[in-house]
Length: 261
Image (cartoon, rainbow, N blue to C red; front, side, top):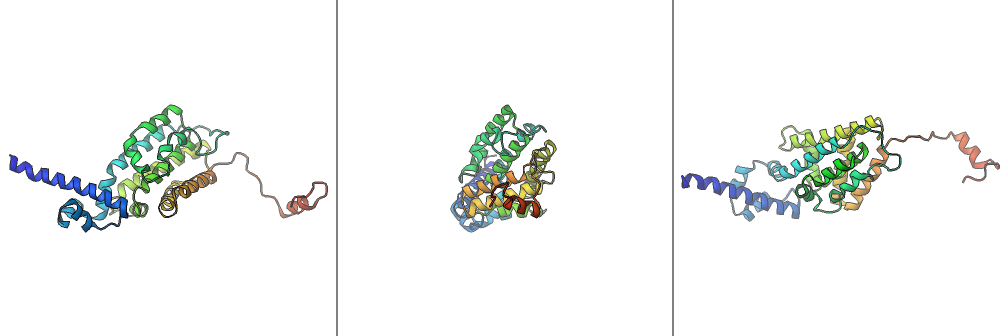
């Protein structure tokens, strides 16, 4: 009995060591870190690594499992906390109670994705209590999904590829993330909080681009892109009609109206 249990116990220890070393290596060098180096640091042969994780994507998927579940739980709670109601005229998109509750998950540092796994349902509970509107819930999701995609250098590209690649071990989780974004922006559309032509593809593109900026430029640059893009997606209650060239000329030079240039 003891002999039969030992291989399973050893395999489990190897599995955990490989995950720990892969996490450290990916944080240091990104998702393209050498798998041979990871196996060596874990004290196992490369064949043992491939026995547990047949591909690099499988290893990344295993590392993201807990983070994925925390992110999905957050998304489900945001959907619950995002009733299809008219947005507040006093608060622009992404600055209301939901955004404030998700400050800990904003793209402000490398540990933001870890905060998802550690914080559990705390921020989402705050959202439910605060009665976040659809625009705020959408903004909170974009920031959390961006932080998730910025967990490791190069992860955003893997996730973008995984969404379209049905053979990828990341495909199912990428589809679920995209689905949550689609449902959140649909609610925002129905409430009139965002433009009628805003789509889930816009959300996915924004999170991918923001995660890339976080990695290659800076977290503040990623945060600014999110803020500017969400503002651009926001519905305008009183759209300004474009001025005709004739009106521009008249307002610019009519003495009665005063100088406009």
